[in-house]
Image (cartoon, rainbow, N blue to C red):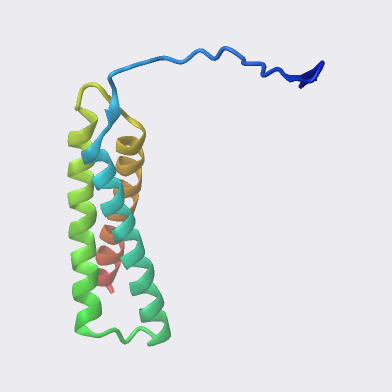
Amino acid sequence: MCRKGRTVARRRRRGYKFTEKTQSKRGLAAFILAGASIAVFCAVVMNSYHNRGAGSMYLGSAGVSSFILGLLAFVLAVKSLKEENSFKLFPYLAVVSSFLITGIWAALYVVGFML
């Protein structure tokens, strides 16, 4: 705003809370690994759909590797929840996403073995 030719900047006081907390590196890594597992899952499903269910051995090994990646992400995310002085956003997101993708992979394998 301008008053008599001078610019007056109004500042609102915000309640900043200064803390020593940092982002959890393990939680962020677990979230990235879970995202990679989800991306591989989508790629495997799309490729299998385009091949009408006749996936190759490489497609199956990518699926098993992605399942192991999801398990690794889950373990890393649970360990990152126990860290002190760190924000918990990425660890919680990593736990949820890795748990879901690992459950989806496990259900897919169980259904595949039963058929």
